[in-house]
Length: 296
Image (cartoon, rainbow, N blue to C red; front, side, top):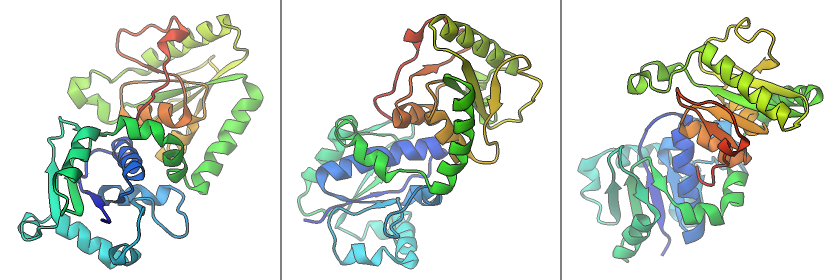
């Protein structure tokens, strides 16, 4: 049977969508299923496509429906269908699996859902937090290859990181997420520029003690950057106009610092970069605080 996994849950921004898509991709590779992630379409143009195939679609086995996915009207029709409970109730070949935003969908639940009804060829998932840990570990190279950023962003990031590498032996990425974190969870993960400055100072001192050579920093933020904030510190600023360029820059660093976020977790996983997740009480005192994420 040619199986389809459809995902329709427009939750969060790039980091959340990457989390969902990467786990879904890994599961579909492992189970030889086709994937149409309707909620990744708006971000797909930021990634390199192969043979004119958009990355929100992964094809394991071809059939007539797969051929139709080349046309935009077919994808629009599927998207409208997946948003309509009225029409979905009339289709016996589509099984729906939903989760609250606060709950996650496990790999075991996906397996059981597909295997529970052999006649069902399509599973529509209305959830964003998919955790297919085993499949992602097994197929991480393939997932990274599929989700390769577009050349325009790779080139933009490379032009910045190459200059940094000429000046510094060790580069640390600072993900200063401040825009939406100002009010999120009552600002628990919102930090002042002076606090980031202190973390940079602590990190520089630590890495120099560890004989990492000349240490430089690149600060990427969704907030306005004040050039005077980091006076007397080796700080370069990321591309404030492109979140995708910043994502590549941070994943190209030797270490990363930032508040808890799916964006930061992706940076660590995709680039295999040791990362320190900061809180208001964090003091940078040991390299053991920096950990590479094995899932995204």
